[in-house]
Length: 88
Ligand SMILES: [Zn+2]
Image 1 (cartoon, protein in one colour):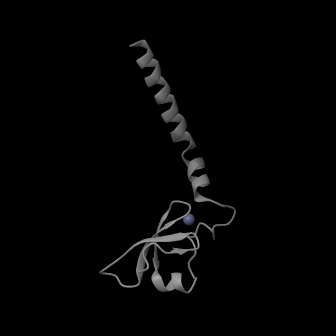
Image 2 (cartoon, protein in one colour; image 1 turned 120 degrees about the vertical axis):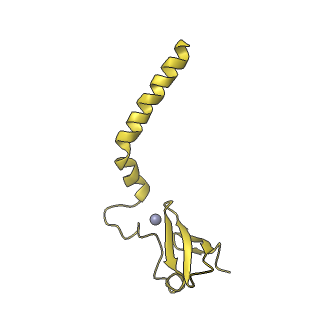
Image 3 (cartoon, helix red, strand yellow; image 1 turned 60 degrees about the vertical axis):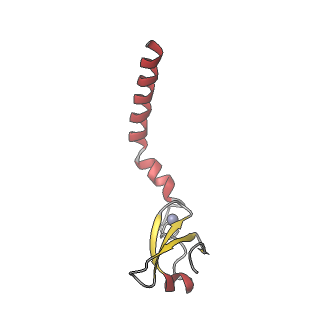
């Protein structure tokens, strides 16, 4: 049973009945990643490729950067909601 096993940063969460040799993994960075079981077992695949990306240690950091504007918008909206709630 390969489900639950960890390969580097990847943990196998499920396999496919219909597609042999493919596993659905969750990377330590939070990404879902589909890999070949044989690649995992031969240590070819150790992460969702976030390890390979140069200049980035974690995809979560880059995601945060990308959504900084959206987060700021959400924060402003939240503050407005709080303001309205306080007035009500
Ligand atoms: Zn990753």
